[in-house]
Length: 237
Image 1 (cartoon, rainbow, N blue to C red):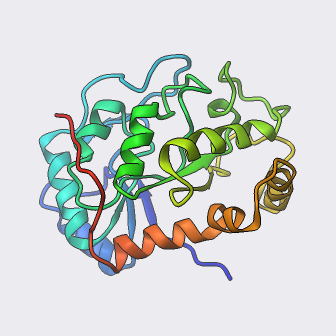
Image 2 (image 1 turned 90 degrees about the vertical axis):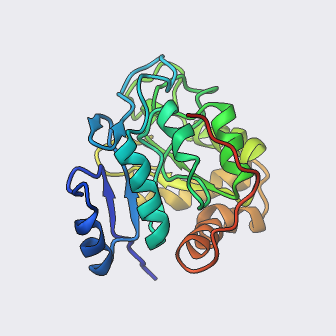
């Protein structure tokens, strides 16, 4: 079964009064990233740089903070993947679980698009979710776009994030559109190859099911349908 989710990456189309946000919600929008990797009226996206940290400048603007509240009101998932570190900590004011749909571990690949261990821990504390990115730039230590990148690096990021977020808060984030993917995966048809590598690394079927779909179903159901209950609250202005 296929179940696409209508998402906007970068909220440039949203007006300051959020009237168009209501229109898009009525049309089916259920997920939104306030920024892509550039600044807009809502905040500052993290640039594509390696090896800097994700602390690359100002975070969310006052309007961006209002956008977080508007998304909470409508139960729209807030995607933190392209937001820089200061923006991430401001976005932690969200009443919903924190979600980064396609990000990796900065400790393993020092790309500015990746998340620090402290950020990963914060996501876990809110019952949130991280989708591991398959783009080689965010997997490799050198940040290169190179299809000749071992699939094992995806597993290394998965295992690192699992230790900090927990087995209920990690899944696949892919980023197939426009990214260089390891040749051992290449496209969506190669996901079964990744599953086989997980089995070879000793992952059991219950964990594999969580990584493949159960964790996404949990967090989407909680944000869209359930209460905005989350764990330990933390934010940094």
